[in-house]
Amino acid sequence: MVPGLIIVCGSINVTVDSVYLTDATGDAFIFGASNGFRYREQNKSYNKNVVLKNSVLNASRRNNISITDGEHLIVENCTIKNAGNGNNIYDSNDNKIVSSAGIAPKVGVDIEPFRGYDSNGNFINFEIVDDVIIRGCTFTSNNISSFINYSGKNVIFENNFSDHNVGASYDDGTKFLNNTLVASEKNRSTSGISLGTFILDVYGVPTQLSKYSQAIGNTIEGFEKGIQVKGDNSIVKDNVIKDFNYGIELKAANYALIENNTLESNKASSHGITHRGDSGKDIKFTNVNIKVPRTPIYFSNFNKTTSNTLIFDACTFESEQGYDVFFEDTDNVTIKNSLFTNTAIKQSNCINFIEYGNTYN
Image 1 (cartoon, rainbow, N blue to C red):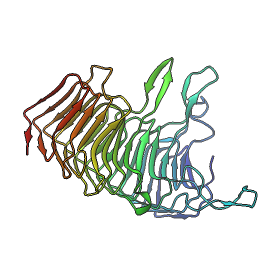
Image 2: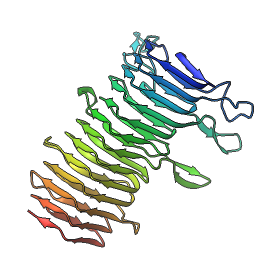
Image 3: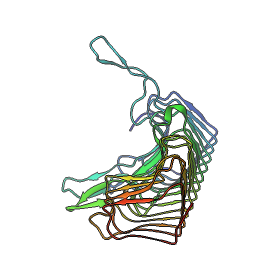
Image 4: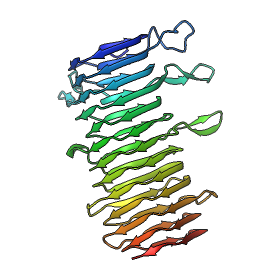
């Protein structure tokens, strides 16, 4: 196990309140496994009902908080900052000198139970993280990310402030709710929220293991991309996205519902919703309001080999520079009951392209 200032493992009904943890050589706080991995028959004790609250976790060399095993875990009202910072030092022969510089993953909170295979190729949850709430926390100046959920289940990230990106992949049921994400100058090239993807060959069948993620009620400002939508069965709803280059980007997204979002940016190169290079299935946009200098919508090579649908209903599109709402090599598109201001639809090599009930200003 990675060295930690406080490690809670195999424990039930634990509360850690009002601690200050700083300058850990590894992690500041670990929710960990007990006596080896949980899958072993002899290891039946694991974390349940553990709370960390009202605390400061600062300047850990690795992660400020790692969550690798447990159920019903809460982190609330904490300040989580400066994880994984510092530069490596090298000698004259370009060999790295041992120092206090950060080491991967360099994240504010990292949820990463170990999943893998036994010697017979059977999938095993060596560790399990299920039912986690991260709420009311402030994340600043963490190196790679404020928060990553990699393979946790039923995780809620709500009412937090972050100056860096947050995301999930290899996950099941992550919810990003009512957070305020404002990119620092250093972090403007990242995505505000990433709903992840993880496609694995399961008995010869490519299988998407990232599913049922949600981004609801968030305010996202100043990132290169506001929200990346990937994985299966995502919901993106009631978000306000500002000051971006790309408001929402779809990539390998299937069965997504995107509704009641506002995308507005004054950056000269801003685009609203984009999709490039990866197919997807059955995406519906409802009441999405876009005002950007350039392209409100750009879809390329989407649904080209499938019978799945791409629907825009009751949306508003405005381009300050007069760029088109553009589709190419994208089939089975319906745009209806929508308002176009200083923009119009342009499509190229699209089959079964339907529009009706739209208004053009």
